[in-house]
Length: 225
Image 1 (cartoon, helix red, strand yellow):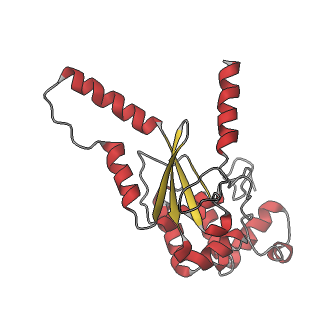
Image 2 (cartoon, rainbow, N blue to C red):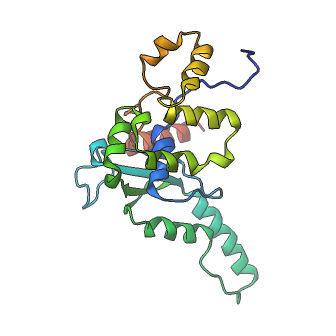
Image 3 (tube, rainbow, N blue to C red):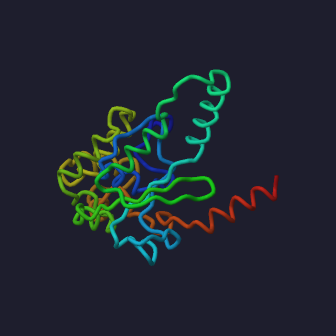
């Protein structure tokens, strides 16, 4: 394979919960307000629903959004009000989208950090798919879940990314997936099939939201500047 050609291989870690679980919340993609990241556990987020924090076995997805969305919106509308004091301002972009988030049937709770808004969602009705996700057995997820995952942002993906996602989900049904990946890896199809999956299992540490670490990181950046 020519090195200038697009590759099926993933060089860096991709947030698996964002790829495989976010679509299952039922939230539609919003190109104006994309999530900052997603997580499946956090010892720092506490509520009456999860008084000891969130463990990955709780089947709760955490979705983070940047506060910049709200700040920019408020700045714009404050300027409008300053220039046109009598203008009637309806519910604005971010506020409207946040209403969509909180009206989702799986929505549980809201949290706020220094630079992010965080929303939690109950995915227990996807119990079997959640378990396969944790085990890194994406090909064993239900056909219903696969269809939602694949369709979530399919139209926005480049052909190589579409092929990659398809093979993550359907390599057990598409022999050419193992063939294509084996060729890039320089392995035999038989050896690659022993691994069973073409996408690595989720890294539970990277899929955990740690509020204290994020705060320390921000403080360190401030000290350096």
